[in-house]
Length: 57
Image (cartoon, rainbow, N blue to C red):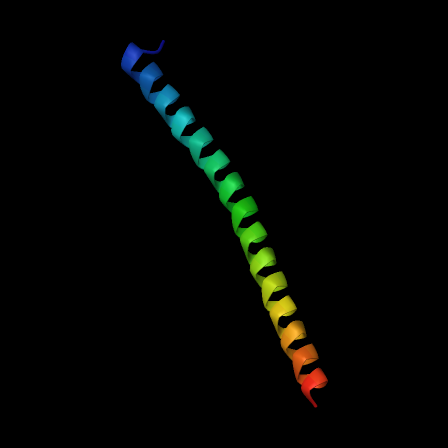
């Protein structure tokens, strides 16, 4: 049926596939969190600058 080396190769393939899936899952979540946070901070800075300019006029 299967030799031991084929069994180890299959387990190695499954391990790499699983690690890649969870790494992709983590990176997608982290990158979306990072982009959202950076956009929100940029929006707050622009809003504060606009308010400061309105008060100085």
